[in-house]
Amino acid sequence: MPQNVLVIENSDKNLDVVSKLVRKAGLIPVGAHSLTEASARFALMMPESFLCAIVAHNLPDAPNGEAIDFAIDAFIPAIVTTDTLEAKTRDRVLEKDVVDYIPKENAQNYDYLSRLLFRLEKNKSTGVVVVSTHRSSRRKMLSLLYRHNFVVYDCPTASEAMSILAEHAHIRLVITDNALPDMTGTQFISGLRKAFSKEQLAIIGLASDQRPLMSAHFIKSGANDFLHLSYCHEEFLCRVMQNIEYIESVEAIRRAANTDYLTGLPNRRHFFYTVTVQYKKLPEQHALALIDLDHFKRINDTYGHDAGDLVLKAVANLLQVHFNDTLVARFGGEEFCVYLPKIDIHNAQERLNRFRLALQKTPIQIGEESVKVTCSIGLCNTPTQNIETLLSSADKLLYKAKNAGRNQVHVTSETQEV
Image 1 (cartoon, rainbow, N blue to C red):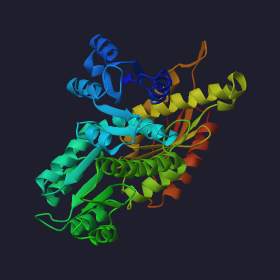
Image 2: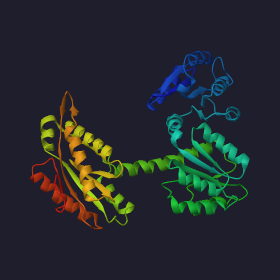
Image 3: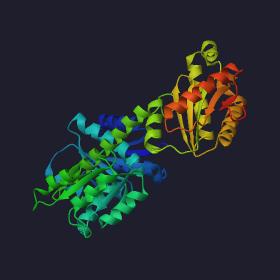
Image 4: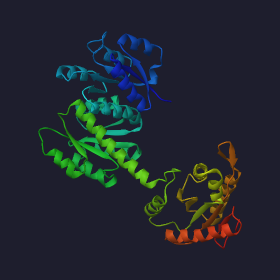
């Protein structure tokens, strides 16, 4: 369910602009022109329903940031907007436990606000590891990260950080200084790079101002970025956001390249990559099935291609239910592939036949009508280390299933055909 964002702006124009950004982020704006109005609206709602508050520093009944204190006291993460760039105002705002401070000077700042709203929600499932023996420095970083809803791991040693990284797949960023009790920061970073590439895990090194060359050592050891320990609030958060967004962008590109756009299943390219990498040596006992929908052209001709897409999605969903423990891919058109490692042909045949029967009995809704589809399956367990050989054998068996009347599993000759 979408969360609320409390927007306190005395200007109708600013309130409208910010509210549009909130809606664009998939959130619900709760607008108010003053602290009094905001207090009244907030009192009528559940505090837990608010993701954050976007608060103007200067309001008619709260000219000195009193609305910021209201949000903080209500335990709502506060993003502050100001009309001025005065250093005194900035310092006064950042002394409080705010998420961030955004001047309303140009469109790019509003773009940053839009990204920030998106991140506050996404950060709830994004892990960050902080590795430092300096308690005060660590406490400052942890405080800023907690305000941005990150899942934060506080580690005084490199070995503890490595253990946490091994346990949690959602960690996207490590922040480390160089003076660690069990190894240097550069040794730690170099070790991490043996397990994680720069596209899998971002690393920011903390360089003291007394050692200006430390930043270069961090980068050469494998860090994505660095921060001097004299960093300001905004610089820290901008670099954290930038590095995490880089990792997520690479993930999105990789996902798009490896996933069939219609069904969400792995595509043919990713199937070959996964089998080649995950199974560098294919198991001695394995099976591979090619699945082709029967008379699929009739569905497209009768109901249209949109209906055909609905059928393909439904079949993909059923495949994921029946084969959620193994590799399933869409090979193109109405053809799918299932690879079953460490299984004998009889058990593989039984699993494929259960899927075939389930598909035959499952009605697929197309508008006001429901249709049922069947499939033909070629299943082989040729003893080979060559995946292409397996596919070729399965393809021949698939054509035998088609020629024998469809809606059946055709298997290697030494087993019974169903």
